[in-house]
Image (cartoon, rainbow, N blue to C red; front, side, top):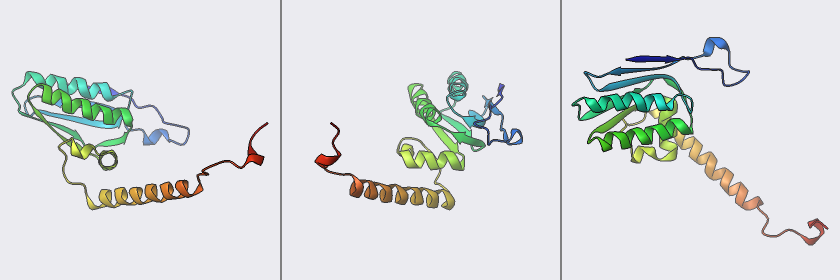
Length: 157
C-alpha cells in the first residue's frame, strides 16, 4: 500500500524545488512502514493508519522507517507516541528509525525514554547538547532580568 500526499510550502522562503512529497509505504510481509516528506498535523494520521494495518499481521516487532522525514512538528511527535501505544495495544513493539531532525526532537523532548530508537549520531548529540546549553543560558538571563517588583513610578494610573 502506498499513499502520496503532496506537501505544501511552509512559507514564501521555500522554493518549489525543495518540496518533499509525503508518502507512506506499508510492507506487510516484513512489518515495516516507511514515511517520507513532512510529518505534521496534515499527515500524521496517515502514519497511524498505516501502522494499524500491521495489526492484521503476525509480526511481534513493527518498524517505522522515518529516516527520509524532512520536517516534524508537535503533531508528528504525538503520532510517534500514539504509534507506540497502538503497537503496545496489539501486544507488539515498535522500533522507530528517525531522521536526524526527528532524532533531535525526540531527544530534546525526552521521547527516547519511551520509544525504541537507535543511538543518535554524533552530529545529532552535539546539536542537542548545544540546544540544551542555549536553553540554560536563556533561562539564566531570563531569571536575572525578571523584576521581582515593579517600581511605583512605573505603575499605571
